[in-house]
Each structure stands twice: as structure tokens, then as C-alpha cells.
Length: 319
Length: 319
Image 1 (spheres, rainbow over the protein chains, first blue to last red):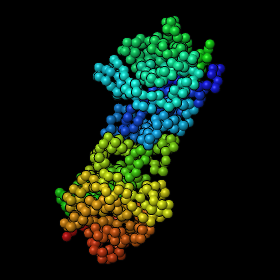
Image 2 (image 1 turned 135 degrees about the vertical axis):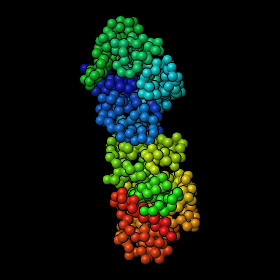
Image 3 (image 1 turned 180 degrees about the horizontal axis):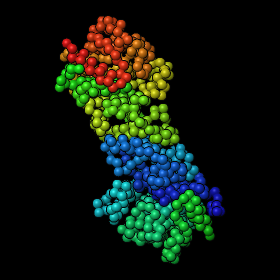
Image 4 (image 1 turned 45 degrees about the vertical axis):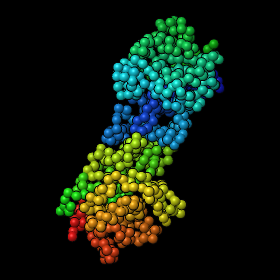
């Protein structure tokens, strides 16, 4: 696969698992030239510790230590601390592994010592030998809430605590209006040769990133100077590969399909990648003004991640 | 063994392992009528978490989950989080087990939520089913420093970090002058029928407790109204059973013997318990005005703990 942008960077916007997989494939292609901007809207405080599910899923995945069986946390994880936390009567709906707990302990200690969120995250990534750079979208706290029949819920209460069961009627990103982009994010976008929007939930994974005004403005600038912005559909055959994106799209008035996702990104992206089984949607997506690419988007193993990533980069380099 | 003080309380002053063993024996005798006042001078912040070595050693021991092999922490402990903390470049001279870490995480979270130290400790104890009450000596931070040839060192830096190797020339308890006794401590002493000073290091385990003015005053009041204060020697045959008490006594100008310990407690205690092998010191200790009791003080198993505790209570009840 030709290197489409020698000497230049690639920025990926990513949420959790799906984003982590494509980021892993991109890292396999371009290593340290990759910057992943991750959603922090899912972050939460547990047991007095700052937990960053999307950052950590991407970090563990790019470090090669992700727990593929669970889909979160670290491989070979143990839960001795969690058993003790439960004995102490701590609320246990968000269960942390022992090694994962060490991440949150270290991060929280360094933040409390006065370090910035991005600096702390970069330090953790370096310790784990991650070649790419993973940047939180903002050092300012932004929290995703979803309105359901049970009222407004914090995202993880909905996602983990209630197993994504309530129907989502509205989404808000608390703090996004006043948040600035994290150090390095705008620079990375300004220097990017290609931007990839990973197949993460467009509403609650990519949505919070785009809600940071500085980031959206930088993406618009990039598009204006001819940088390809390649979005990959996380909806395949009308279903989310993981998580509640399909039901959430439907309940928020979108179409639960690659076309529905394409409509959300139509004003931002230049290219749209959809799965072979959705090939019949390509003309309608093309009619939105997006260049379409049809391929196998199921990243079931490392080689599939790397292939999809290479294809995204190659398409971005096409005239 | 007769119950010397039916319906009335016993207060034990204790440091770590030796104190925990005698407290365990006392709890076996009198259960919830026992209040243990523990040293907090050894407490430290690790990875942003408040670690309370003496409180936790006593708590785990009285809960029946102490790690007897290591002499600290929890039985069957694992160290997955510690391995990860090390990978993150955290200073690792104070190694915390996974379950023990959960104690520090929970405690720190509850303190940060605004709860008082004593309330937090009592909550942890209740969760572990501890029948006795374990009170930190103070909710105010008091920290033990030792002056060595390397200068002033924080206690755990000396004790764990430098393996108690430097000679100690001076000891100070930072914050003790302005500290008040923790909630419940003075009340427990005022209501005590018997007070036991555990065979902990008299300088750096019991010393900090006595450095809290309100506690020393309450002990003096108790003695004044005829309450027996039974001190147990932690020096046997001139050697500390555990830790650096013997060398510390010597370098601070005391005699490293049961007699040296007795001299430290002579103005406070009424009774002094020494080991069979130190029987020849009994007359000199008696000459200090202390009632002496010679017995086997080595608490190598649970029955020995209970027997020594029962003897202490019986002697306290003697006319």
C-alpha cells in the first residue's frame, strides 16, 4: 500500500472500541505520524478517580494490551481490588480491573499534583510504549448526558449502569460550549494530510469531539484547504457493530443505516466508507456530495484493521 | 480467665504489627468493648492516596484477614496494580497490594467527599465486620520524621524506603502540638476500666499518640482515678521482636531493654509486662514504681495473643 502522505500526519477522531480498532490499523500503517483525538464525554469519576473509558480503550489497544475478550480494560485482568471495593460498600456498577485501576490512580494523582489532562495522558501512553499520540479532545471537563424516559442521565449511568436500555430522546454535551481544544489538537489538525473519522457512534462518540468549537473550526479549515476527511460508517447492515448507535440514531430521528450516518457527516467529511453489504446505499450517499468507498469494514482481526486503515489512507490520497 | 471489668471498656494504644496482635487478643476476650487508638504518624500519601499503615494493620488483623506471611497487607494479596503503577513510572518503594489499594482508594474518595478521618475509618471497619472500635489518634495530620545522618526523613522513607538502616538521632511529630484527639478517643479513655499500651515501638508507634496533648491529659486523668495502665514491653531479651525499636532506643540514648522501655512509660503506666527471659529486670522496673508481671509475651499464634491479653486484663483487675 503506497504511503499517501509522506512526512505528514494523520488525525483520527475516535470513541471507544470501533475507534480503537481503526486507530490500531492506522498506527500499524504510519506509527508515530498518527494522532488520535478521543472523546472525553464518557469520562467519569469513580471511587474518587478520573476514569476515561475512550482514552484508555484506545491507549490499551494501541499499546497492544487491550482485553479483546471483554472489549474493555487490559488483557489478563484481575478483579481483586473490585471485590474489596464491593466489600466496602462502594457502588459497583462500573467494575474496574486491578491493572486498569492503577491507570486511574496514577492519572488522578498526577492531575491532583497540578498536571494538565493532556500531559498526564501523554505520560501514560509513553510509559506503555504507544507509538501514536492520543489526545483528549479537551482538557476542560465535557460530559455527555442523554435524556431518556427516566430523565437526564449521565452517559455511563445510561451506558453501563442501565445497559443502554432506555430510549434516548436527546443528547447534550455539558461544558462543550465553553471548552477549548486540548493542547496539540488544533495543531495536529492544521498539520494533517488526512483526517479519518473512525466508525464510532456518530452521536455520542464523535459528536462530543465536534461539539468543541475550536476542533470543528479546525476541521472546516482543513477541508477548506483540500484535506480529505474520510468517515467510516459504524452502522453496517442497519446495525451498530457494537453499542447502541443504531437504536440511538433511530430514536433521535436519524435513519439507522450507513446513509443516516453519512447524512450526519455530509457537511464535514469528503469521503465515506461503507461496508460491502451496504453497497446499494452508495449512490444515495454519493448524492450527498461524499466520495464513497465500499469495502469490508468488519475489523475482526489485526490484519483487517490494517487493511481498512491502509485503504482509507489510499482513498484520501486519490485525486 | 475472669472478666475483670464487666460492662466497661478497655482502651489499647497501638502501632502496627505488635499492637495489632495484642489488640487481636484483647478483642478475643472482650469483643466490642475494646477501643484501639492507633498511631497515625506513619501515615503517608502514595499515588495520591492516603495510606494508614498502622490503622490498616490493626483493622486487617481484627477483621481476621491480615497477611501473616508478609506482616502487612491482606491475606492472599495480589500485586497486579502495583506492576502497572511501576510501568507508569510511579515510585515503587512502598508496594501496595490490589485489595489493600482498594482500602486506600475508598478512604481517599470518602475523605475528598468531605467525611472525617475517623468516620471513614469506622465505616471501613464496619464493612469488614471488626467487632472492636479502631480510632485514629487524631483526625488532624500528624507526621513522624526521624533525623538521621541523611538529614530529616519522613518516617516511611526511613522505615520502608531505607529499610530502617540509618541511625536515628532525633524524632519529631509534625503537627502534634496543634492536633486535637480524634472524635471518641478522649471519651473512650474517660470511660475505660483498663488501658493497655501494646508492645509497639515506644518512640515512633506509641510516642506519637502520647504527643497529642488531649490524649496524654486523658490518660493522666484515668491514672488519677485509679485506672490501671498496663504497658507491655516490645523489647524482649534486649531485642525488638520486629522493627528497629532496639536500635532506635539505643541511638536516642535509652537502654535497649525492657527496663529502658519501662523508664519511658514510668510516669504514665501503673503496670509493666515483661517477658520471662527478662525476669531479672523485674526488680529494677519495680523500683520505678511500676507493678511488674512476668510472662511469655511472644504472640506467635492466636491462643498466645488471647492468653497475654487475658493476663493483662486480669492483672489490671488485681487490687
